[in-house]
Length: 454
Ligand code: GDP
Ligand code: IMO
Ligand code: MG
Image 1 (tube, helix red, strand yellow):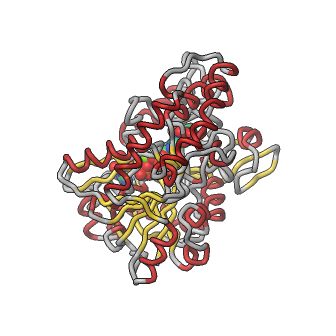
Image 2 (image 1 turned 90 degrees about the vertical axis):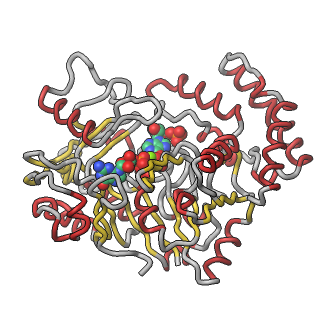
Image 3 (image 1 turned 90 degrees about the horizontal axis):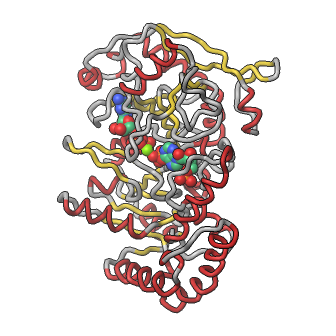
């Protein structure tokens, strides 16, 4: 059977940790979209692993597959595999031949286009994700399978590179270097192809996974990003360029929707919101310069709110792993979660980070929005309309900080009562049962209520 793990908000909900937790019962862990824009944390034997491309299951000896819906930067892939090997692990990673390849010019163009977009910039990770998916849709992309076939690779590069070079030079007026040089790209990527072939890493993803399922094995499908940054269901244009929603698990692996649908779809919820990037955020607390629209650093959002935002940010470690930039934070947004529950059809929920909110006097939740004078319970379809929504808050009594490891050992009833009231409100509103509750970053700091494989 399959268990699909989906982010229900804006990314960084703790998907890696849940994959690690439930992955024990899985034989194969496959990613179905995104690329090295992701950052999934797994804490194993006290060591923290931050994976951007290799599926989280690889840390525990599972077969990791990068599905056809992913975009692959071979350099990141091999760097990550080599680093894991240096740390004593033996990651077994397979890559779909149908997956598209991120080339150096995609990264360059990502940076140029972001700078050009001004207010419409999403604050991308500049990994070339968007430009690679553009080329996929434009039928001018390079696929993993092409890296194994030098003639096909050469043909593709000869067609596409002059266009990209002209775009960079003539439209955006930038100077270009070896990242737009056909011979250089050909040699470098042909070598990546050789390594993929030598290590027997490429697969026909759908067939590979279906055969494992038919043999009675368990497959876990690891989503990256989250529902509200999905290209179709998210806050367009402040989104990523793929489908993190559960439908993406079918398209992005080659397993039929009925196969995915017979399994479980677990929504990962962070008990508050965090956001790396731009665009509106109705339940935001305080603000962050350069990300919060129209944020005035001198004015701020009021001392109390800024203080609360800083508290949650510090307790939750909500700072960019690469840049150290503060992330935007906010209260839980229920219209966003109702939208996610419908778009993904969650069969269960893992709600993380309730420890971060401990010791607050009150915990608020955006229960609904006031939109042009009426109350609405789910997100409007345009981001402009979403920006006009004002959250209507419900307040919960806070819960104390306790020894969370003991709570995790003792089980659900050991969670402080006020926190349980909060959790049960969320589960009821989303009409999905709680499978797990995250009470700390470690795997042992999780209250397991239900194992979807059992
Ligand atoms: P992902 O992208 O969804 O896999 O999430 P990230 O790994 O980017 O970010 C989640 C961060 O929160 C990581 O540093 C995790 O170790 C940490 N984390 C996960 N669950 C919990 C939790 O329940 N409580 C706390 N305090 N931290 C958590
Ligand atoms: P994980 O898997 C949080 C955001 C970026 C930007 C937008 C588009 O760790 O949850 P992109 O580089 O994808 O074109 O950027 O999406 N973003 C994420 N935010 N977590 C992620 O991944 C993200 N991946 C992309 O900040 O706003
Ligand atoms: Mg992350």
